Image 1 (tube, rainbow, N blue to C red):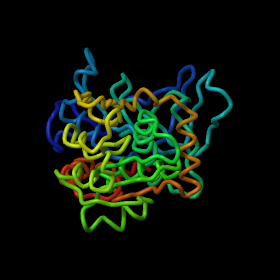
Image 2: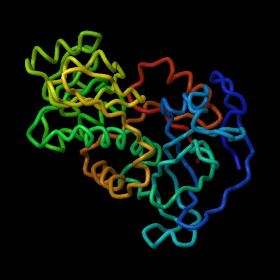
Image 3: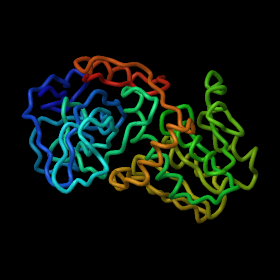
Amino acid sequence: MKAIGVFDFGGPEALRVLDLPEPQAGPGEVRIRVHAAAVNPTDVLLRTGGHAVRMPGREPPFVPGMDAAGVIDQVGPGAGDRLAVGQRVVAMVLFTGPRGGAYAERIVVPAASVVPAPEGADLAAASTLLMNALTARVGLDALAVPRGGVVAVTGAAGAVGGYAVELAKADGLTVLADAAPHDVDLVRGFGADHVVERGSAVAERIRELVPGGVPGLVDGSLQTADVVPAVADGGAVAEFRGWAGPAERGVRVHPVMVRDAMEDTGKLDALRRQAEDGALTLRVAKVLPADEAPEAHRLLEAGGLRGRLVLDFS
């Protein structure tokens, strides 16, 4: 079967078309004929060697991709009756595992990591949901700001940040978000109650609106220590690249590891339902043929995208 991966870590040109053995579903697993795989920043980290420490002893090729959408074509023993052959689904894929990631015509994943694709969404759009929305969900859960409280979101125009704004609003929170001038309407459209200008002074701008600081902050812009001053004493920050502090004034820093929730079927299915209901916005920047994965990585690294790039394996 066709897959896209790397033998040697490097730039986008390291990605190549591979011919790999077709996997078979084992106990508790399903096999998916992939139609679409979203391209995420963590895929770039795999390509450049940033995940090598998580793959000790693994031999290449390494296949990126944590987000897939397609159709189930094989159900393994003990996978239960929740999923069936022919069903349109979305899945989270642990690409640091021995089978590799979602950039492949067929993937085998635990049934717990698979839920129905959102009704009314094509598979390209559906592939952009789970990883980024689950990351935002886990981050908000770590902050544990009670309903009626206030949360700030940086990087609010991005994929994780946009979902964080929408999920926080669905949780009944007041949301302060950042945006560049040309993204203000976009971020307000996600439901942000107040929008401040993004940049290195974002913490000061948040404090101007909430002088005592916000009780929780989702750091979608990965500014780490620079955003901590926006948080109230004893508040909390959700971080997505492993930064764990330290932070002063009793501020708690929660490094979010989305892989820890990949088999939380309840959370995944709740996100699917919210996408169906319109509470979450599926955003596709561009769909490219799978063979153009190097170009997709170049576009992602160039920045400025609004929505996710998607590789078409259909």
